[in-house]
Length: 286
Image 1 (cartoon, rainbow, N blue to C red):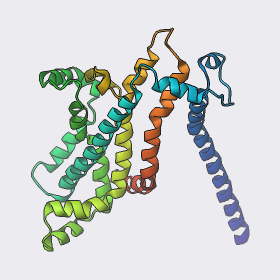
Image 2: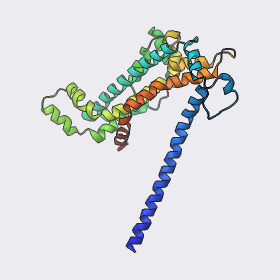
Image 3: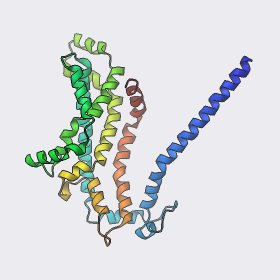
Image 4: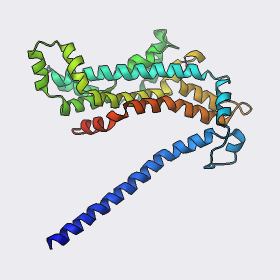
């Protein structure tokens, strides 16, 4: 009887495992299929794209890229601008969010819970609500066509702070901080030499998320960047898509989209080994 029950239990586990693999494979297919469609369309000409979708690549990829780089859109300048904005935003946002989370986690002070609640309340405010005031502030400070309004406000990232704070709750014991203080370590030395290395998985995850979010951001840059030499790739892509009928080339649009996602893929590949460990540990408490 026991043998039969164990056998049935084993079969049940095996069936659930098969179902899980089938579901995961299906989800992976849905995620990757659109990248496949994008790459296929980037290899086709404008005339071929008007005929509908085909799963077979064409031979116009390098032609589309050549037309893109030798057109009126400063693609390489846009790439440089996007890299500068996204990289600075990712580095500064994660560093200062980690520092803020450390202050809330490691120190006891008056109104600590109120400060934590206030930061979380900011998460509820959409960017569009503050857009008008933001534009007036930027214009008043003469910072239009400048990267400062894109980088500095992004340092205050409540979502990033909250994730890192939850990660600290699970992986940064206060006894370790107290031991460092007893040994004579200063606060900045403790933070940079002890806390940051322990937070490396969570920091890597948030750097990926912040980089991608900044890289894909169109709304805020479109409000303050007007000169072509400071525009980021999402703005240039929108400009390319809004070209008149005689200049519009869908093959170039798809080629530019492929070109735009390559840096994101590179950043993901560099930091992806931290994602699983960082998300799992950060999600222990919520």
